[in-house]
Image (cartoon, rainbow over all chains, first blue to last red):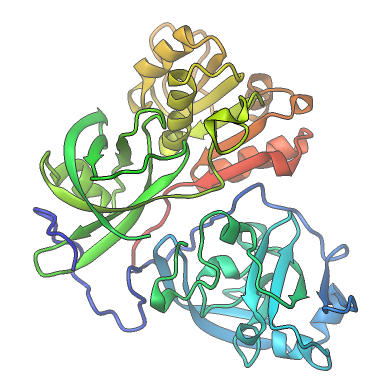
Length: 197
Length: 251
């Protein structure tokens, strides 16, 4: 327990089920990015999975749309302490994208248009836990929120859900991505409050 | 990073609805200009709430001063602005953030040579706070790096640190400050109030060829709009760092 802050009572909603420690609920969808929003058209958009032996598997926008599309309803948790319950997404499961790809590497680096990167263990992308998402709340994903497509890994803090995603590179060893080099945790589990180093 | 107890040792109103607080923490390590801290409040029954606030003080000062803008529907900011008193305790985690920062030296240490890259700061409303830490750090360290600030606010009464910015712009030779008043101007101001537009921004900032390090901080629409103008004008997106404030409405 922390220190008593004289005269503070707060909003009095402790023990909200589904709310990780140190988080509060919001109904808005705040934007957090480190730089200008990249503008990427569907025509130029590509998604690549690059394995440790240098093999590249690539999808165009139309090829992505031709894959089985999942409807996902999930809670999201931002490291800046807001959480949003029951957000609705559509996207392609990483299980679908990795189907048939041979790799023995255990870690991945997701990378984005605009240069953003974030590291995620492969196990956290598999088993119905991660998607390349292109719709939010029934509408095409807006550029500020990562459109045309972003990674969606909702069981980790939301900086792991790379906006403007354009590929995933397999790695034998875990390496820090952008925010992980700038003070944020390597893994980012909201239930263990893995915010900072 | 763990929580440390902090005592509020000074507090004053900056503008209606904003307040600066000096928080004394044993063994505070100091900070880099642009970093933030998390503030945790605990109610009598153990309920806690945490929010992040930019540090306003100079990195040379070794003191932790935050400037808090009261959000109408906020949980922590109304307490810090209206309720907390000198002597009250809060908890602090930080300093944090390794991206939206400015260092006087090219490397991490004092012996690494001066960082002479021009710096362009663009702030909207309370987005001035981390930029103010950079301006104070720059001035207090007598840095010779060219610094420019474009500060857009609705009215003179809402401008944070106005007197200090005017004074620093006069005293700190490498610092230039340009104002944009969108709703009301000070008496005798040469131009009428107007929304910040592309022309005003481009006329105020370093030319893209100068490769200034650009820091844009404000509300999400402000940051989106200004950053897009800069990219359209030929700025390299990699030279532009952004931080967005406010807009988080608790459910």
